[in-house]
Amino acid sequence: MKGFKMLLPEHRTWKGDVMQTPEAVAAMTRLYALGWGFRRIAEEVGCSRNTIKPYLHQAGWAPYRSPARPRKLAPLEDWLATSFRQHRGHADVVRQELQRVHGATVSLRTVARAVQPWRQQLAAEARATVRFETPPGRQLQIDFGSTSVPIGTERVVLHLGVATLGYSRRAFVRVFDRERQSAWLDGLEGAFQYFGGLPEQVLLDNARALVEHHDPTTRLVVFTPRLLAFARYWGFQPRARAPYRARTKGKDERGVG
Image (cartoon, rainbow, N blue to C red; front, side, top):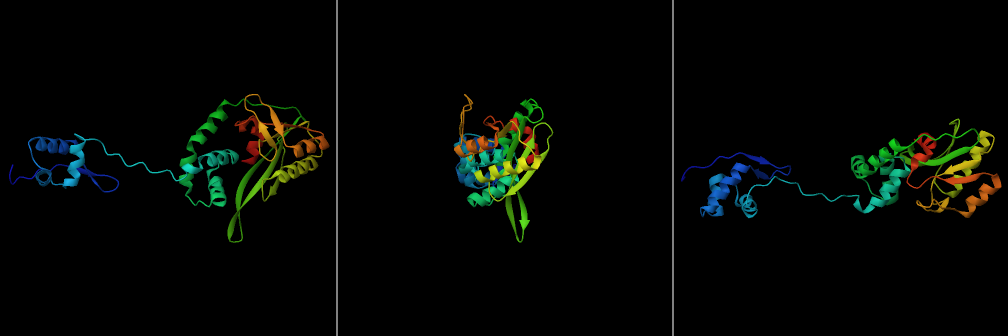
């Protein structure tokens, strides 16, 4: 074989490294078994010694695997899950909140990849939901959503309090700069005034501003003292949706979207 150089096909990985074919690796293995050194084999097959060594050490050919890339948003996984549900699956709003709250600037594609498992879960919940109707005057649903609007030279995140009547689907919307307890209560008072009356029940989210504890098993709910005092003053019964079941407020969820 002296003076004859083997011309075997090769491919390149996404980084540009040479990835040898199974035929080339089989030739390397045979020559190595005959006692050939790395340099001689490299000259024979037309590649570098550094290319040959890994194949011989792993005793044969194996498909190339790109190295696992560290997930940039992995440390914020719990926050992402909560924010994604809070914003009804709007990845771009989550991206804006991510930059505002944590100072992390990432692409929408990065956020979309990170929240993909929860998007599938939300879709499964939507398919499993049974439509629930209430008679006139029985229930008002209230929730918050977020959007961003250009003000001057920058984009500003606004929080939308949306109240929806369970029977007629009539909606009332008020804009706030923050989603805090006073915003929830101001939004409710605005809805009562706008609709010209009170419902028997108000179905609320499990926001920390309203609910101190909600056991998902026993369904025991502990509302904040201020919300209870507010409900007694106006004469309605507060109810909290089931934890992790945003679709139990589906009428208001659609309005928020």
